[in-house]
Length: 246
Image (tube, rainbow, N blue to C red):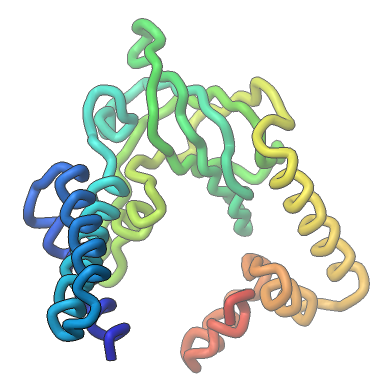
């Protein structure tokens, strides 16, 4: 039962932090104080449980405050809506490849607006570009285009979806130049290379659409599924089986 109370306290803390603007240090102090007091008063079970819930609530508030970035002139999202923006940054995740386009997650380290001075910058941009030339994890890019705020749909909020991943800016079909390759973590490069070889091997041994289905189940990449098969999984509520977690 305690776990249920703690779970409720955690989600309430996330909501409370979204409406009450407090410094993360205050949340942390309340959380540590609540945990210490709960341990000291553990013989008084109900009182101790209440303090533990307060502590978890406060720690959830700290988590929310530290996860939400400060959007100022040092963050790329500050420039959403600006035209003729040039950024440099590193591809920090496996490219998300679809039929015609690829989405690249780029950690920004500098920006140049309308031919002005190049300034240091932070934040992450989702860059949508064409599939070719192939751009891999660990590539350092120079990207010129329009920085946009991700859109809000009637039934699906792409803005909220990306925000949960720490992304608040989008660049669609910009001019992309690869400055360097094979940067980033050697471990991640090895993992993504192994995944790519495994996907190629599956494609050689098994015909479609079975190969795409097996790739989705084993490797978590369902981009190769035919649209009609994807729709069938979606309509029957079975999309969870074409993911590693499912």
